[in-house]
Amino acid sequence: MTITATPTPGAKLLNPHDHTLIMIDFQSQMAFATHSIDPVQLRSNAALVASAAAGFGASTILTTVAEKSFSGPMFDEVTAPFPGQALLDRTSMNTWEDAAVIKRVNEIGKTRIVLAGLWTSVCIVGPALSALDQGFEVFVIADACGDISTEAHERALQRMIQAGAQPITSLQYLLEMQRDWARTDSYEMTTGIAKKFGGGYGIGINYARAMFGAHEG
Image (cartoon, rainbow, N blue to C red):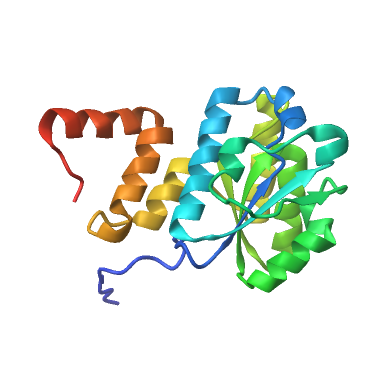
């Protein structure tokens, strides 16, 4: 049997228009007890994801739990890329059990769900397993999630992966949507997000441009 390669992306790769991103409970009270990731890194990764989704026009739902009565406001870095977008506040720990969120999921109508938020073992496991059970394809941005311990975070990821969820990272999410530096319409936005929130990679972009006038394309 002969297989012929073609210069086309695989169907399992994400693109800006084939999924709904749900950013869950990036709130003060939830962050206080998060110890599986440094809080500064968590905020940076969450900001990278939000900025990438907004920049590429990916359908995005922002949801909080008990915002006024207990958990506090969502991180500014997450809400700023979506000016004027309503936050869907819940009482349920499992986002997938909230009628307003599911109404919005159905209005958007995408069969792929990308999840990021706090905590991995509760508020990410719940919607991940529920969406998988209903036939959705689920991706979890592992480094834009956190939990009360590394053990809790890792066991939650394992549980979701065993059920069929696909783990990715925040920078991977950004670069998977860009995929080709020849896409000049989104080039400056992508590298700008990477420079601001991409850690060492962003520092490298700044250095290469300043010292050598380097350009990925």
